[in-house]
Length: 123
Image (cartoon, rainbow, N blue to C red; front, side, top):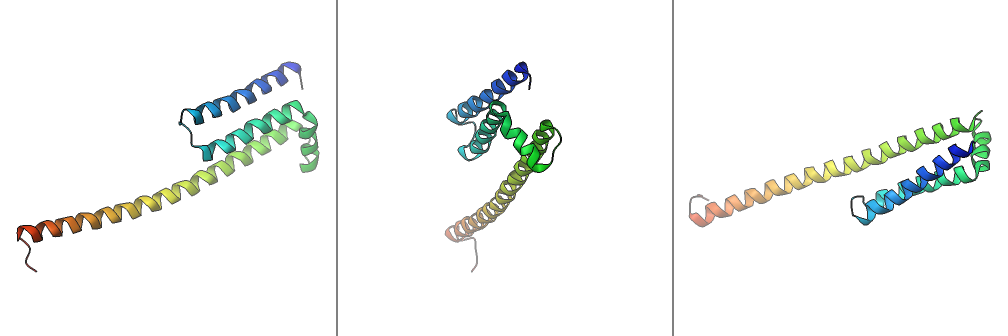
């Protein structure tokens, strides 16, 4: 890896790490999501500083060029990230449905009590 490429990768890694910490500090990013991004930043920093790790991983998975290994792991990362958010969206959709049903039941109960108190409802 050329010196300029190494410096660029280190700077990007450090910017990702500092940026994520700052987003968590400002409460713009939930801590549960920050962990994944911090691990990504540290792993990028690790393979930049210790190129031997990337070469070992490339040999392990049978990639000819270490950059292919980075692309493969990047693709895996994006797929896992998409899966994680799909799970979160599914949980939220279920919670929203349940909350909407509870609100409808409470509204009906309030309407029924209002009719009972005003004497409009024949029971």
